[in-house]
Length: 110
Image (cartoon, rainbow, N blue to C red; front, side, top):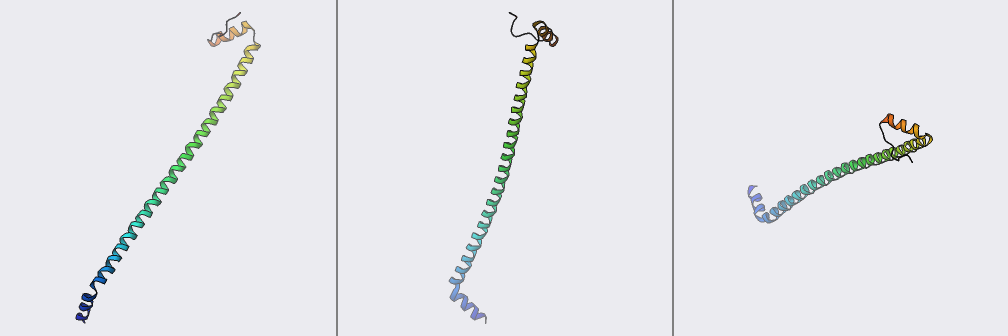
């Protein structure tokens, strides 16, 4: 029985070596492919997180711009109201109001 096995191994050793070699190469390739697929999945996950952070940042920028625009509009409304109030006052009343605030008149009296 042992001699039959030894004679078969002697006779077919190139084929046996080739099959094991191909099997080893196939296993190596499969492991490398699996590793590459894992790295691709990790990279895609990092990309998704980065895109989410960019979207959050853009949203914050848009909110800040909207708040700045609203503040600018409110400042303009306040300025127009102050100008209208100043125009309604007489010169002496305006000088007294500015003096109470410690401010000076920008346009001199004619």
